[in-house]
Length: 52
Image 1 (cartoon, rainbow, N blue to C red):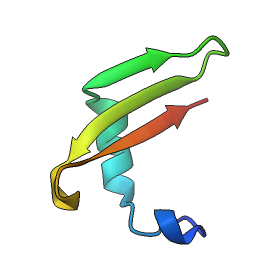
Image 2: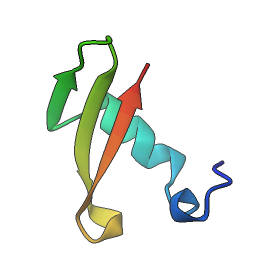
Image 3: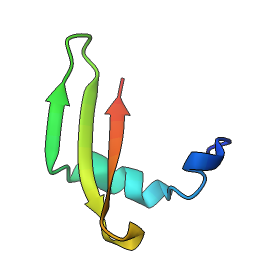
Image 4: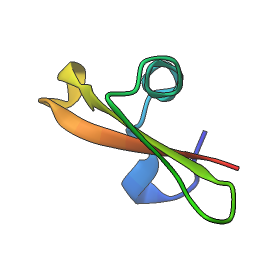
């Protein structure tokens, strides 16, 4: 999916989960939407997804 080594371990299902069930959402002035959710499979780390 990602060619960046720091993002290689991110699972596409995690991204979909954040998009569908965010625990926090912020709409930026430029219209981008930032969403966060905890990923239990990643030891509870939070994943942020930015929607353009």
